[in-house]
Length: 433
Image (cartoon, rainbow, N blue to C red):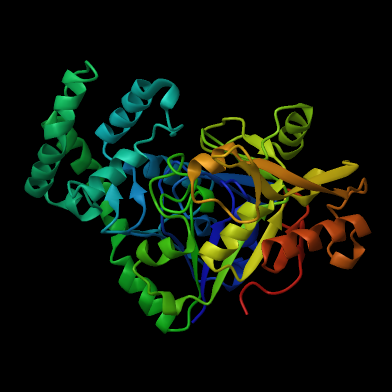
């Protein structure tokens, strides 16, 4: 009954597809449990590269059943664009299952998202403008639309009207926009619902039955630990729980059915959007990391902010997720550096003007935003490591760097990514057994 959670340990874009590849042959189901099409990940198969945004990575593997869980917010238009694009490339998407309890992103959610961000100005959160936050807000306010609502016209119309009652007042009176038409929106959602109907299912029941039957389920999180609505760098976070606990609430599978929690971490750090990022580099080294790592968002194309590895964040991720393993990615990007800094602690200013060292994540977000990284440096390496498949064959300085990250993170590193292709990997131990 292997239930395996796979999550990001930093701010996203860690390369979770690399870990999925390692587990791939042993997985029967891949279930996405949070977020929406505001997250993107790339799956490389041979010479083919697939940029996925809403679909689980298991969609590429013909023997895996991909599942979109109830914790995901689903934009049907985006879903079908992605499905159509994959099918044109010969990928069979007929196995896809979508929870009938998942929340739906309606067209008005995207409108609200964009006008709100513009209204906030310099206080903007840095959302992708795809309606994720407003859809989750409707879910919490109990005026959201679920997938199964799209199959009942009168019920759907009532829900759209209830949701737009306040939103139209806000659009007209606060943002000086035209109101959104209830009938037009309902008809649009009904048409999308007809196409979505064959994919809709009670995915909680299906996943529980699969685990009880001894099948392997990989629970795949979008975004990452530091973007968690409860445990991330609030308020510059996403609107869901991409930490390990979100896998249970986002799929309807209990925690006693989880066997492994695998965290994916880059050998350095990146972030997209607004918010604090203690190790961020604003100089030529930051530009070098961005160029070497091809650090541009899969979903948005935005250049990622780049910085050195943050061990405080890594220790925190190990703790809040209960990590059993770490997959370290993009180690090859650091090739060519003479010295590699690692953030081992923060320095923060106290109210009396004195300064203190923190080895653990501060809960006070003002303190986190003002934290200064405390670095130690390790020797770099110049050798090409992309073809190496045995840890013992890595340069001694590379091995030492990995061992130091493992010690600082408080969790074993079980696999190392040494290049962009799926076979650029050093496996130290099984991620399934």
